[in-house]
Image (cartoon, rainbow, N blue to C red):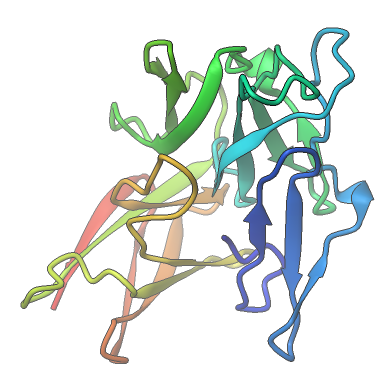
Length: 237
């Protein structure tokens, strides 16, 4: 899940055999399906000539080009017992446009594997400020993709720690604000299918060189911090 509309409420992505359903959070606590024109339904393979429905598994939001907008990766893969679904079913990498819609870029990015993908994680494995991708496949080796996108925006990593059993402050919410962008993420360790979250939290800042960070800790305490871009901040209490 991720707050895509800037209202402080997380949208939710639900994968399935067929439509990949994004649910938009409402002010009254309910959810409504996103319009089809948003570009995230990913119903059928985006390469090849197999027009049968796709099978989605793990879905994860993350800003892979650091433009301040969350993008979306969906792991896809056929199930042997479901011959009515697409066999060659490439993963999706959906980049968010300035108007909030998404466009397919997996083939261009080189991550449109046609293995039976199940799980995934987006994290900065090499520490260069760009999120890399690991994909877990069924009956095939795990795949690790290094992000070499040129001309990405600035970024900020946030790693939390605190005393007690909940060392990494799981459940905390982090808001990062620049002059033009406000983003929020909740610190979780699960989510999706056969995948999870890898610390630290990652925020793309576009062209901003500094940001203000507000942390709401699991016990409700709030701390505020300010620092420059292109580094990982280690915040403890």
